[in-house]
Image (cartoon, rainbow, N blue to C red; front, top):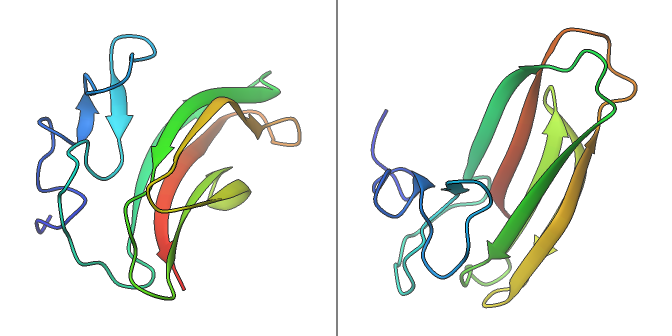
Length: 129
């Protein structure tokens, strides 16, 4: 995989880490982007990072998650969007304002209409026009 703004520091400031400036839920958190203030990267429309996990959702009605979102500045005319979903279908989203921190204490992915078996759960951070 080529190095880019989303994967250049895995394990240090990105990826599954003990985060700076927040109390982790469980032992670790997964950082999409960077946990370092002042980092500058240039991204294009459609650039994104996706955290996905395949899980047996048999009998489950909901998946809950906690997210702390802090969007950096984006190019003029662009914004950051945080999405969550299952099997490539977006089930919810939140537009992020640069420099603002948003705490989602009870994010939910509805699984009640899924067939039993394995499904791909996804969280994504995308640059949009």
